[in-house]
Image 1 (cartoon, one colour):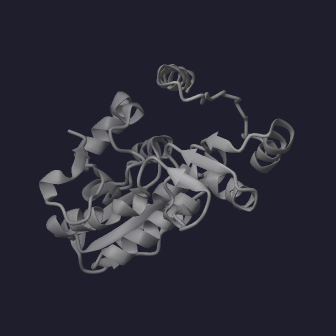
Image 2: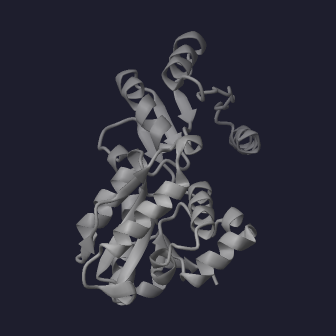
Length: 256
C-alpha cells in the first residue's frame, strides 16, 4: 500500500494536480465498527482501502453507508455485499460469478448428486445459495462448520460427510461429488481428519470440487499428505467465471 501511495503521489506531482494521498493504518481486528468510527470522527478519514474479508465488510458497511465513507476492498467477495448504491467498491467480482461454471463442470463430469461442506459465514452461505441457483442436479443439505476453526471437531465433520455420502441415493460414487466451500486451512484440517480414519471409504471414492478459496493454494500443495489426497480425488476448483464466454476462457485449476 505504501509503494502504491508513493507511486500515485509521484504521478500526481508530475501532473501538477495538487492531489496527494496519505496512508493511515486502521486496525479493525478487535472491533471493526469502533475502529472505523474512531478513524472517521477523530482523524477525519473518509476513504478506506479494505477490509479484506466479507465478514468485516458486512460489519462496517452500515456505518460507511450512513456516513458517506468509501471503502475499496481488494478481496471481499460475498455476493450479498454487491448492493447498488452502497459505499463498498471491490477490485474483484463477487464469488457468485464462479458458481455457474462450477455447476457446469459437475454436469460435464456427469455428477448428478452433490454433498456440500460449507464454511458457515456470509461468504459460505452466499456461495452455496448461488450454486443451488445454477446446479440442476440433487444437492444434499449443506454440512456446515464454524469459522472459529479451533472449536471445530473435524473428525466429527469427516464422519458427518461420510454419512451424507452413504445416504445419497442412486448415484453411486461415479455420479456423486463433494463441493468444498471454504479456505485452505479448513480444507487441510478436514483432509487430515479423513486420513486419520481408515474407515471413511466414501469420502475417498468420490470426486471433490472447490471454490476459489482453495484454488492454487500453496499451503495445500505444500502439505504432501493433503496434496496426495487432493490428487487422488481429482480436486478441481474454479477461480472466476465470465458469463457468455467459452469454456476455454475460464480459469480452472486442478491439483495434479
